[in-house]
Amino acid sequence: MKKYFYLLTLFILLIACNKKNEYESNLKIENQSLRNKINDLETQIRLSDSLKRTSQVTIANTDVKELISKFNNQKYQIKISYPKSYFQNKDITYPVLYVIDAETNFGGVSYIVQRLIKDKLIPEILVVGIAYNTDYKNFYRLRSRDLTPVEDKDLRMGNNDVDPTGGASKFSDFLEFELFPFIEKEFRTKQEDRAMYGHSYGGLFGSYAFLDKPHLFNRYLLLGPSLWYKDKLLVNQASSKSLNFNKRIKLYMASGELDVRTNNYQEEFIQFLKQKNISNLKLESEVIENETHRTIFGVGFTNGLRFIYGK
Image (tube, rainbow, N blue to C red; front, side):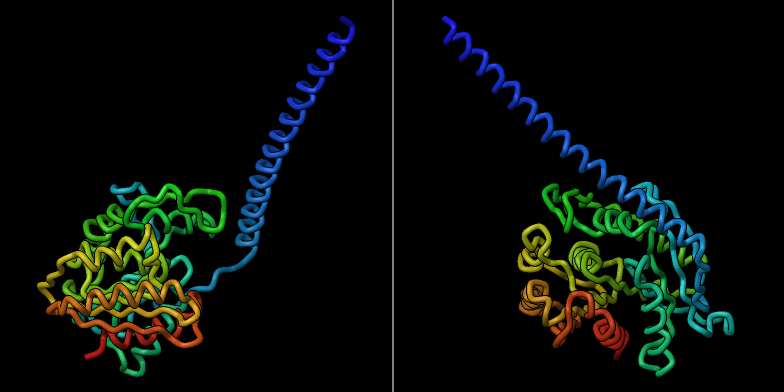
């Protein structure tokens, strides 16, 4: 009898130890999660403090507006870069280049545009950048939401969090029904001449607009487009979709030679378009030697502007 009692006692102790180990393991996971959140918060506080101590640099001939979209309840910061003649001759109207991801690229975009205008390689244009005026981490979450055509609940990009996706339709409604009317009312623009620039997810959104909403733009400059998204959804659409344009469309795509996955899907996408012999479409595709997904910007943006605004 004592033998069974000892065995029962030992069994109970083993169960208690296992439960204790499981509890300690869960506690460690919760503690680590809490530490990560505290670290993120401390990083944001340090960034905020540094911005308070740092004076901002102003880009000449620029302005900033704000719009709140009724389609996704998002407040957008709209950055404007004027051509130099804008305030000198009030009879001139200008083509508009709409820039995705102006949170990070507006300065570089504005500079290259000015250089090409000065050398008379492109016409004078009004640059309109779309930004969120938020921190770096939230910027990537919001662009993931706005620039992807369908939802992907399983997608993880470099972290364990699932970023929101599938908001491209609402974002395009913001462009068409809120941003375009605002820009065309407030500024002297050629309403029939809209271009867009997008990189990575921005290139994905541009490809979506080109296939599904071609009335939005007549010039597309797309770099490193994320055409791998959702099992290359848009590449497959380019293969199967019937495309007819009632106006002249120019499409420029470029990716870096070292960005192998992206340039493979880009070339597949472009090949499907070429096979269709689409009237009113002029396209150019480049895989640029020795460039990566990030370094494609300088040469790709320059070449792209010269193509979409060229004769």
